Length: 287
Image: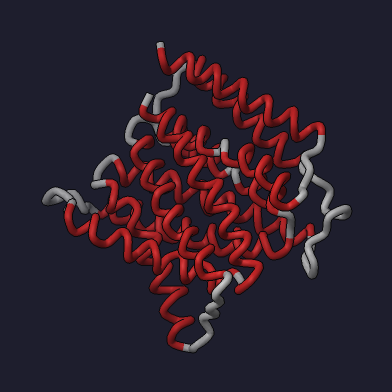
């Protein structure tokens, strides 16, 4: 049951990050948005990491490798995602990138996580709904992003999904060995080192009164989302990963109201399919 609740909370957090990052990245660019996001996350994460230190001997070479993969995967995924928002529609880019959960779930199963046949079928239903929603999104030719490219948006979103998926699996693996705060920390450290500090040093960090609150909110929600994901992953990485992809459904609905990106009939079928899969999975996990 923990994986179900954590997956849903992660989806809510990621809905918030989708909307805030889309707004910020279109105002100040992908790199500056990412820099503010990781700086915010690092400030929030460090106190918790210092309070809850790992047990002696917990930072083994394999765990350190997982932390590195988690950090690089998350930072690379965010950079690609923010660039995607500058090229394509929020509903389309977020839907395609949301397949990260399916990628993480497949990796977890390949590396030995046990999943019962019934749960596997329910997860497959959820993934099918997400994919359907992703590839049946609104037509960008009818609602183009100014100066954007649908093809580039698709490419960025696909690459982001792969990076996020690998990073999510690594977060889940690390969370089984370390305190939650330490599973959250790597992406913030990597992001500050390779993105924020170089931008500050070269005076290329863009700050904007309108964009700053959105980017800071994005940073806070990113930390919350990874933390809830890590909590759920301690019970089941595959289940938490797939349920977290529900954010595409919530985002599509919110984008409809905020950005006028009306979902297509097939996208609505995808939303319904996700709802059915989640209901079946909830029933199975409750028994």
